[in-house]
Length: 244
Image: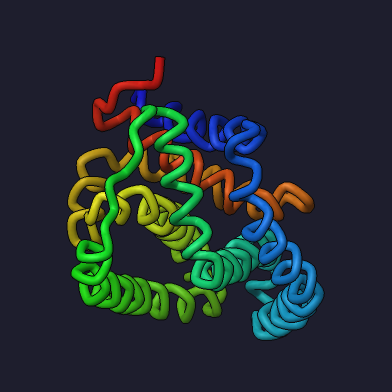
């Protein structure tokens, strides 16, 4: 059960790390990307949720109208999670090079050891990195699309909502752990294998990331904080010596 409380702690550590003088310069671009993306699309997201909610309520027969008191709140919350998760995926794709540098800088700050990266290693990792991202996309799509369809079915979406929240929390962790682990040439298959050994740690870390993504203003900073927190998790849970 310790892992259930350790995951959120790492995200809080990530926010604290962002204030360190040597790391601040790596935060500027990811924050700007988040501000532009969330600021530009948030109105469209809320409009879609409102329209679809009215459609779901209108589709309920009279004798099941009482279900609207359960279906509507659950649908609204989960839809916002889905939308903001989608925003996060796009933001991470755009900011990936900067997030990789941030993860490297955080690891150096925590361990005092510079990652040894040479051009030969970088070139060798291009194809594995591309295949890793493609596998991640296929993995996500095969699980997300059926869940999203079930979210549109009144009644059934109550169960689908729980499954979606768990899946989203898992994918949030996979997304952000990718940066420190890829810096050590561990890609999607190896990442999942390691994270499966600590599911409560993965769910609790990703769950808090997902919740903070829904909080105005804080969601502008959650991406770099999650990268920093995931890197701290990687360092401390893998026995790497902390910097004195």
